[in-house]
Amino acid sequence: MFFLLSLFILIIIVLRLYISNKNKKAICELVNLNSSKKERIWLKPESFKHCITIIVFYSSLVFFSLYLLSDLLKMVTY
Image (cartoon, rainbow, N blue to C red):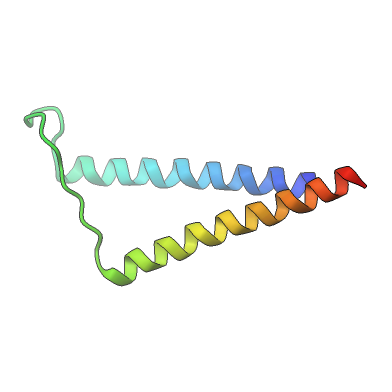
């Protein structure tokens, strides 16, 4: 069970880094950050459906992680 939890956390970290780098490249193509003024860039979600999808995805990841953690704690105590 500890192996599954570790693997799951590793996958989340790798996906987060991959998505972050992909988004950074995409925004650098749209906006030249070096020559622009230091102002806030307002990023809006594509649609309401997109927001709901992200919320469901992250909440399912959190619940699955908590489930694995609770199982791990049960195994350690027994």
